[in-house]
Image (cartoon, rainbow, N blue to C red; front, side):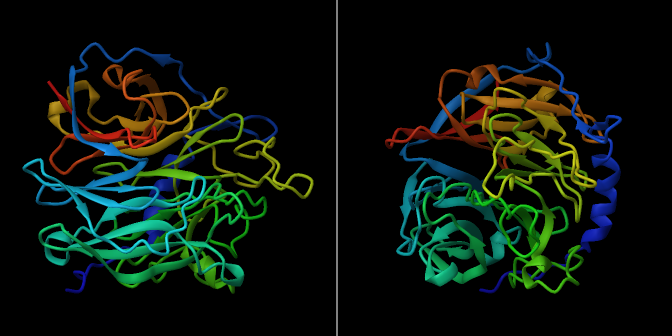
Amino acid sequence: MPPTARTLAAGPCMGAALLLAACSAGSADDDGANQVSTPPTTSPPTGAPGLEVTVVADGLDHPWDVAQTPDGTLLVDERAGGLTAVLPDGTVREMSADFGDLYARGETGLMGLAVDPGFAENRRFYTCQGVTDGGPDGGPSIEVIAWTAADDWSTATRVADPLVPGIPANEQSGRHGGCRVEFGPDGALLIGTGDNAVGTNPQDLGTLAGKVLRVDPETGEPAEGNPFADRADPEAAYIWTYGHRNVQGLAVRPGTGQVFSVEHGPDVDDEVNLLQAGANYGWDPVGSGRYDESVPMTDPALPAAVPAVWSSGDPTIAPSGATFLEGEQWADYAGLLLLGVQKDTGVLALRLDDQGRLVEQFRIPELEETYGRIRTPQLGADGALYVTTDNGDAEDVLLRVTPR
């Protein structure tokens, strides 16, 4: 069955709204250098609910992403290949799927996962994954692939292979492969990519690496209203934002047009950024002709480089995944932006004001020092929080977190 039809709102309209919010996220000093005011890490608010954490599925190996379908089924993918469905009755079912061309090396493999808004009718979902071909000289690349799930969750079948091709992969190491997929508030599919540890990629509008892309999920073509559609480079038409290092999370703030990205920094300054159409987020690691990771994550020398909403400073925590908590059941946690922590353990919570400025940050106590590295927190359609750990050796789990 073909995907359901949808209308995509033009990008610049959404981008204009985001511009007002993003410009207030930081300040500039007398030399034009962007500065981020980051409140210290505190304890959770006094009205925070206690949380109950249960294991939904175990025996997983580097589960990268999780999404919930309208019938309550949870779909989980693993970096080395594999899809698992957790049915509403608790049955855990490994799905049969073709990963014969998967390129899984270093940080690249089977990565981001998103369920189509029309899933109840079309059974369609999307993955972003490394593949063994499609790159220069027939080498590996990264692609977005559309799939359909069988009614009984026994199999997944590729139906758009690829939907979006040609995202560069680092053949030698698999480093900085991204890759997060998320539906924007206008129905376009957003794709956050890594820079593949190539210094020129983030600022080059002729490559899809180090970007957030915006595409029509039915066709894979650039979404209407993308800011660089008139450029000669065909790749530029797909690009929504640029100047990114390694996008590991995308989150849409409920009830707003705000979209946030989560990125790994070099030795300092992991970032959360409030995205705006056509904006440059300032990563430019060219240095002396090599991949220079000593430069600022947001380079103040770049004209109009957009400052981060949140920056880790030193040390970094390697944040991954992002989701907003929503619903009265979350009490004083409602509205928080949650990030998985890869370099340490647990989940970091950020409270943002209406303009996207950081108000406070703290760790979620029930997830701290207990489950190890967290790859992805994701709010489910049922209002529960689902969390994938990332410890390896088939010892990872999918967690369900709910207020007591």
